[in-house]
Amino acid sequence: MLNVHKIKQEICDIGRRIYQRGFAAANDGNISYRLGPNEVLCTPTMISKGFMKPEDLCVVDMEGKQLSGHRKRTSEIMLHLAIMKARPDVKAVVHCHPPHATAFGIAREPIPQCVLPEVEIFLGDVPIARYETPGGEEFAKTVLPFVEKTNIVILANHGTVSFGETVERAYWWAEILDAYCRILMLARGLGRIHYFTEPEAQALLQLKQKWGLKDPRLELTNCDICANDVFRDSWKETGVQHQAFQPPRYCKSGSGDGQPSGQSTSQSGKAEADPAQPAATGATRQSGSGGQNSSPGQAAAGGLQVSVAQLGTAEQEALVQAITDRVMEILARM
Image (cartoon, rainbow, N blue to C red; front, side, top):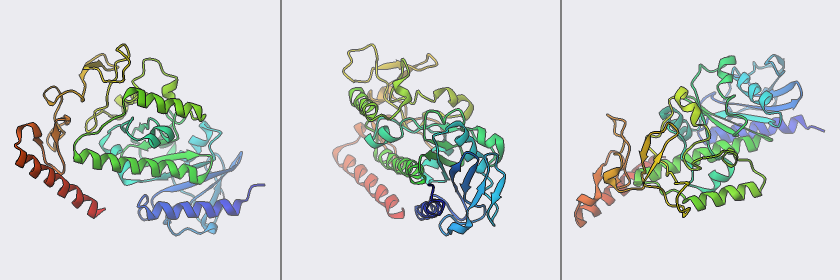
């Protein structure tokens, strides 16, 4: 038998964790849990998620009509209900504003793949939904193209929405994603990102399949498994494009040794230089005044941009120290 009071306590506990991690300032964020075919427990509007009590929660039907509760239900409940209607297996939905993941949504930068094993196993490709004014049916529809193939979606210029069989599991996806995005930013500040080789990436996909975890990349043909191919068709509408992070592109018709090809063809048919090649053939790091990307032959952090190959030993050491000092300064403020 469903213990509603226990679920209310769990929602309040997750609300505190969201608040304490800085994922929801003031009254930001909302949480829901499906109680039955036409009843959904949800957080109210205009309340800090860090200080909720079980009696503060509301119950709505699957159309958003409030059935009980002395507080008014969240204004973004239609987003939760749209996900539950599309995914009958989903019991819980968590919407919050994790800062590092939200930054990727603001920049319209796709989340890099093939970097951390845990992210490959538990998240896979993470889509960015187009921006829409929060609340209402149109806002809820923005996630529908993605919910069948993922358990978390970044909402452009807004936050994230994640979902699963329990409230805690739905929250986990947001926590994993934000921690990953922070790691990416720190690593990018140090210089370049080292991606898995193709055999290493394939091994993780096989492990995922062995554990019974779905991944759309397993179903796609001619798929660059590290290049965000799963949701690429949505990029034109949302304005998403690779800028700060250039993924490896593995040659499917090559030797199969897992090494990136010197040049590959994107889905649009345009040849793209591989970022693993020397700096002379790559692009440059994006600056405040342009849309260029960084080549691996350059080291940059906090605005530093110098070609290491052009420096003497003493200058290289000074540059490394400057980068280290800058990164430590950033970490000290976090």
